Length: 496
Image (cartoon, rainbow, N blue to C red):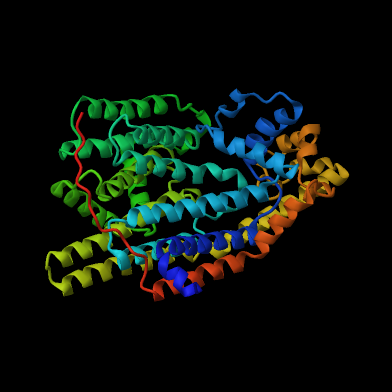
């Protein structure tokens, strides 16, 4: 079978593979350019002091994995740190960045695919391509080049796995239980993950209001999800140091919420980005589709995005648009993009005037495209600044390890010493366990497992190949007419 013939027979899997390669390649290029082997900022305490030090001393316990970092319990991030140490033989933040790139790329493509099921073939392909293209831009560069930030990606992975499983399953079925478990596990990544069960419960409640769920079992399922979120939110620790970033009035919280909902625009005009999704939800509720209809997943996704924005507007009102939150905001953008395409197609099916539909969609897309230039134009300078800071910090740590000059502790925090507290960093660097875990780039020792370095180097140097292969595959798929879609809608109504 020829290559073109193979692609023609497996268009959807090849499309998904091509999008993964584009995203993965873009992440690898960023890591290759701006990623450094020296741990940075919170990594010293959260990974080094809290995990690797007791691990190497033989005193690490399961309870240590659940000790909060600020308001967050980052259990899976800590597990990954130990796993990567076992693989590389040292504290390997570069390998963690690469693992994060795999998780992020696969998750974003999977979410885009799941959301696009409401669209016919060519529109679905267009939505997935545009979503991938926007996600390939390094809006969340600090997550990509900070190995420690695995939890930002796994929040998306577990949350959307939960929404996928819960949105079309009967309460207390094995599929429902698996979805509830994924939703609960989302809280072990970021504190805002505590709202994932509630977002799923709210979507299931809307299904119940539309007559697609009924009975005691379904009511109990919704109640359990809501109660789980209440409990999880209640055990989020209070961190006094974070009080200055929280909303201190309803007005401040609303202002932060508008900023988040308007992203990437820096004006209130950006609220129009959520207009198609609002109409999508209203029409879905009015039409009361069958439980297996994929529109319910999109409704759940929108509720989840709104819950995350609400959490940020309350918990980080002073700095709601930090780049580390871009990955969540980009999912909201994908939801809105799919909703806009669905609205255009639905109006076409209803026989509405083509000129008005085209003008509305073109205007919406135009405002979005222009708005994306606002955060994008600052990216090169910010990434270069980040790269410079990491390079200086790595050089200063290496020099301290070589000559022990105590002047290191007086270096400018973050900018010259890769920590918010240089004296605490000096203390950690003098700890035998931490010094034994440091990467070869700092100690000058040969890497314990050369094959790991070969794999990492091969992946990073092949970054343009991954990206280029993804683009080529994508061109072939589009040329062959896009991915096929199963347009069937299975009627279903859950009863207890």
